[in-house]
Image (cartoon, rainbow, N blue to C red; front, side):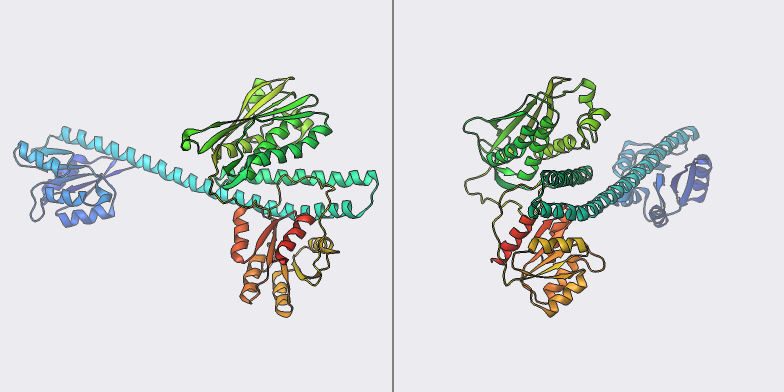
Length: 537
């Protein structure tokens, strides 16, 4: 049984014994003191639920002791009852309450009254102890949940790396086959299938990572100037081909004088719109998908400083029943199992898109839907207008797109790295082979190192114009190797190649001394462009 500790302070032992006997109970544990010093020492050692203080004591009186107790923050909530042999008068009662007492008892004491009043404070103390126990348990569970979230996030980040590393080789070799082999229609279709499914796998990895960030309240958002019209143009270009393949008409409608320049996270906005419009195309077998864009001034940030953008997406697809719509925005909440079998997907996209939209000050909602007829979704975004003096930030060109798809036949600009010596560092022989093939014909001389220590040895013995540094390697990782190479005095560009698609990991690369970061899988064009941009400086 939980016992409540009660402190009895009196300079007469017979008074202490009498009160102790009076309060003797299974749920009470009494501690006694005969002066203020003993009382203060006991208070520091125990958690008392009540203190009974005699008023008149030699040296420090009960009133003075109460003030000392109340002066310590930890003991301010301790209930104090004064016990006195003085005759009852209003001035003494007033002084007692002014000293911090909750009650004053006058001798001779009525046993029933004393027990009743003490029992009330005993019950309060027990309720307080129980509440504190619940709070401690909740805090323990919170700490365990936080630790589980961190562990899950680390696991997902590591799984992302482990999946992206071989995927980088698969997609890279497929790109080279498509580029270098005058293949038959059948082989081109096979390569296209590899690229297309690789892109789907990459998007699934990114969705899982986004979900873990949302659950851990670590969703990463940027704030940079961008042109909304450019985003719409890119999305229309990207999705028109998909719509055309299905025989759908994709219609974008935007008003004249639509505002262009805003401050927000263009990558995330593009992710949202690609998901919502892409779903409309995905779930529509025939007919049309209409995208209507509207804007209106938003006064929440000051007149003329922000706009509320609405993107309404209407399809003529399979539609939803009321029950299906209820679980639509939940994780893994596709309409039903048959939807997953027929159309594929993880069921994460809508939930992630809504959370991102809300983080950006907007929302996503289902306006209407009818099974067999189609659905209408509304994306709302509150965007700050870019000021006239705002410096436009460069897009994060050194990060791989999470919406990558099959390679196009767009002609590449020729590169010439003749006379340049490049060191490629990676523990994967396949990735080193891929880098070698990507650089084939560029004129560059390429050396290889399979770990950080060998890279340091290469830098000590030879001069390099640029280093391609894999980040996660056994023994000495890429960041540690980069720091050591910088300590050796190397001043040339170092480009990190990482399978970690997390901004924090990319920041680590930059702090270690890398000039740029490329996220795997990396296309040949992205790699050559990044190398060229640094070798030309």
